[in-house]
Image (cartoon, rainbow, N blue to C red; front, side, top):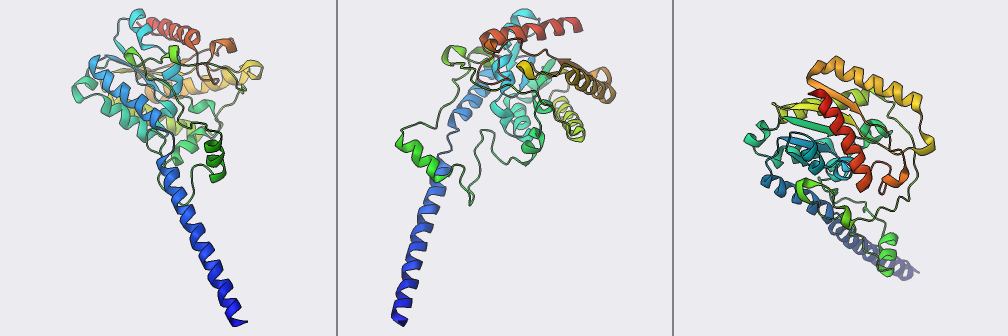
Amino acid sequence: MQYMVRDKSLYSFVIFVFAAIIYITYLFYDFKNQGNGWREDFGLHKKSEILKVSPNALLLGGSNVAYSLSANQLTTLTEYSWYNLGLYSEAFNDQNYLSYVSTSLNDEQRLNVDLVVYSGIAPLKSGYLAGRRKDRSDPWGKRNLSLLPNDPLALTLKRVLLRKDKKLGNPLPIMRGDFNFNKKRCDQNYKAAFEREMNWKEVEAWVIFQVSKISETFPNAELVFVIPSVFYGETYDLNLDNLYTTKLASLIQYKFNSKVKFLAQPPYFEKNITCDNEFHGNEEGRAWRTNNLAIFLSSLN
C-alpha cells in the first residue's frame, strides 16, 4: 500500500512537471509571437521618411489620424509642409506616443514646426483613458513576458490548425506618412455606437497633459486640438454631443486662452466613407475630413 501511494505521488509529480514545462514553453512562444511586427514596421517607416521632408506642420494622434487625415492633401490646400505621424492605437499609452513623436525629429526640426494638429479619440470612448494609463505595452503593442499568455493556448492551436496567420496588419505608409489605401480593403463590418467618457476628471487631466507635453516638444508651434469625425449611424445623440463639445471647448479656452484652438469635426455622414471601424475614414472619407480641417485652418489666418 505504501509503495502504491509513493507511485501515485511520483506519477502526479511527473505530470505536474511535464505540464509546467509545456506551459512555460508556451509562455515564451506566445511572448515571441505576439503578431505586432507590422505595427513596428509602420511606425519606424514613418520615422525614417519624415527626415526626408523636414515638415513645418504635423498631424498627431492615433489611427484616426493615420487613416483619416492626409498630409499630402493639406500640403496642397495650405501654406504648410505637412507630415502625418498618426500611429496605430497612439502607441498604446501617452508616454510611448509622446516619446515616439519627440524622437522622430531632432531639436532643430522641432523648433521649426509652426503648426501641430492633434486629434485624439479619448473623450469618445468610455474607459479608454483608464485603459491607456494602465497599459504597459511598448509602442507597438508588445507586452512583457508574464505568467499569463496574451492568447489562450486553445486559440493558438486553432489558428495553427486552420493555418490562419496572426501577423495581419496595415500596409506601409506612402509619401508624407499618409495611409496607403491601395493596399487596404475597407469592409465596414462593424457596429456603430455613440458614447462619451463621462469621467470628466479623467478627460480634464488628459487634455491638460497632452497640450502641455506637445507644447513643450514644439515650443514655436500653434496647436489645434481636434475631436475627430466618427460614424455613429442611428445611435448619434446630437444634444449630448453638443453639450459635451461645448464643455471641451470651454475647458481648453479656460486653461489655454487663445494659445490652443479647438475643432470638433462633424460625424461621418455615411458608413460607406469609412473603413474598418467607426473612427477610420476610407480614401473618400479621408478627403472629406481633411478638407473640413483645411477650411478650419484657413479661418485661423
